[in-house]
Length: 175
Length: 112
Image 1: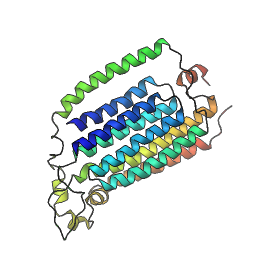
Image 2: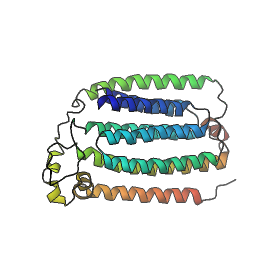
Image 3: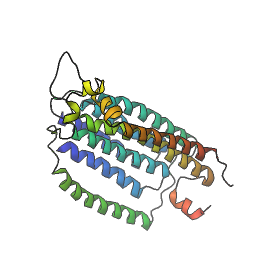
Image 4: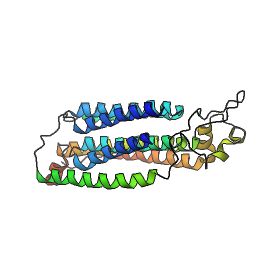
């Protein structure tokens, strides 16, 4: 299991690297799809079918949005001149990456080893959750019963985002 | 522990893209790559070896489930991620219609 997830994550990393460095914007967007759909397979391997279903729908929609934006504008990457600012950016990125990697190493050392999670928080949720919430699916039980207000907030965020998109796309800009 | 590290490397790839790229669409792509890596990390922390999907079957009470709590949180985060992606793309298409380019440096020089 660990090997399979590692291989797929490696493919996702390759897809992300290609998406960042591709010359054509359309192929960059499609390579972003590699990452999203690889995540779907990872969720299936991690026994999270709900997440896989939601992710496949969401990834398809966001790919459609990105492809629509790219097709509506210029596809090719603007000619990249070598300027000193670019090197400064790359060096900054490398410094931040090395620093964050050390932080992550100390952070991951307190986690349980992969595949041996102790259910500290979720044990009360799992015990008799089917009777308490009336839902056979524990994820649905947590989402709509134990953390119902969280889901309400999520719906509020969605409505706000839709209103924002409508507002941004409707106004006429000054020419 | 290898999946955790690969997942973090994916996050770093996204971060590198945000800092070094100048194309707005590529910055949006890097943002969603970072999002995906965070989802994957949360889902990884909930996995138990030999666990089954957290769906209760009364006829066959299996004792080991994977952790449903990170899954519920990631479910919320995925949908919010779609909302932010749609918002970012809307802003980007507005910027393109006004300035005619995706290059953030040129946009900064034009100044409306």
